[in-house]
Image (cartoon, rainbow, N blue to C red; front, side):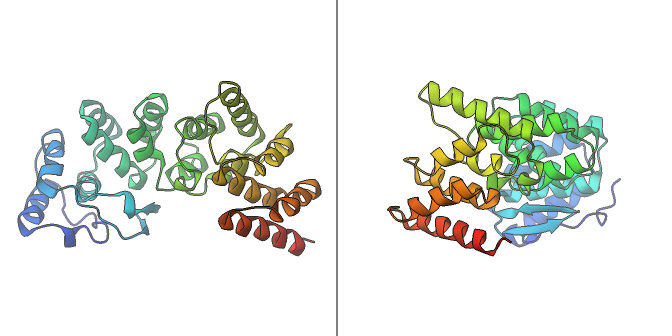
Length: 280
């Protein structure tokens, strides 16, 4: 039998549960087969949005705005029952779409190890965007896995390239800019060029991430981004220009500021120029 006091629930989880749901969760933490219990979580605990914003839990940083009560219950169950790496992977592989999502979201707070590498590899190869988002977004799992050596640089690059490919916001991967490197910038620029040639939409955060590890063509791409027709692209380019602080880019940013119609973009351009003035 498991020790139900071994793990603490996420903030706000128990407040969102009925007495019956809390009772079921207490019993599930103490006894029962995980493959039998896991499919019951959405029905027993509901799919109520937890809210609560960014929190720290079990050494991880996560945004509870992306979590539901069944996700929080899944994490509590896994932290209490402590399945082995093989058992956790098997629970994922045997699960349906929702069960897999719960496992992947909980992964951010579980001990880093072989299961982390295996499941991140699964979502990197998967075409199921909600599974990729559940594993990689709204937490600092990716940077912690890289820092711990669970993922190598190539693994991390593939994950961030996938983020661009499926068009999810960079801000949802906490501390992602720490993973920037010139090889990743080259791949992102190649992807952007391929999409432009095919008339397809380019990832809006390309210019921001490549600015953290410039390579051949980076300055030209950011310069072009300052004139892009989409506000989000111009914002990313302005932030990229601020990070690089290249004199030519800053001159272009100043010229753009004088004729920029969007208030949000003007704010970013002005911030980039102020940051450059403060830089020795």
